[in-house]
Image (cartoon, rainbow, N blue to C red; front, top):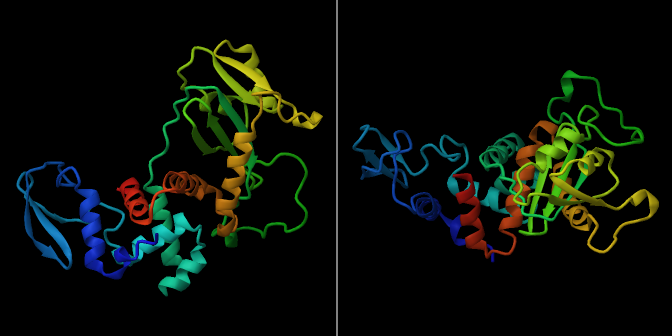
Length: 294
């Protein structure tokens, strides 16, 4: 259900921020002391005084919401429709009646605040790579225009504005990870698979050459199918989970018109957050998204 009550007034939005941010007690954002007392208000936001450092702060201090052109209810609306409905920034611009630049800055500020996922694999694990269109969006005026002709054949590359994005599916924990990279080589694959519980991690791959080195390593037990030979599954050996998740990744990026490659990481972190709140009801989903950004 759409959490309409959180978008009605700024005071309702401020109450929600207070609930989420201080659920474990109020703490000074500067010195991290819990010796705080209420000290009036700043507009509709509660203000506090830290007895340890003597400074005052409010519910927004030290968060992505501080010193922002958007008020809290507009922030909540932007975050919710961006994650829940994959709404494009252009459409959010229309709904909020503000500039595209303002919307883009706020969405990117939110996405950058999200923590990188800690990849801890229990196994067995599927790993596969996909190449997405991500150029130099927003900085093309300083360079020659990109060619709009047919794409060159072969795998993409970071330099060629089609960086690789690795998808990992941990069948043991049912966790899924989407990680952009600058190169799709052996060192990248090893780095992604480095933290695992099993002494010899079972890894399912396709016939990608960078995965070949895993066969000579005692840390990994690689099994694979070769798509080029028309082989897509052999019992438990397949990367169908990766391909399914990669398809969702492409659909997530599609409304954003080839996001810039230097912004790809935060956008993909937002995609992973979207998966976490997918089946949560509206109010709970919004709280989860706010908690992730605080």
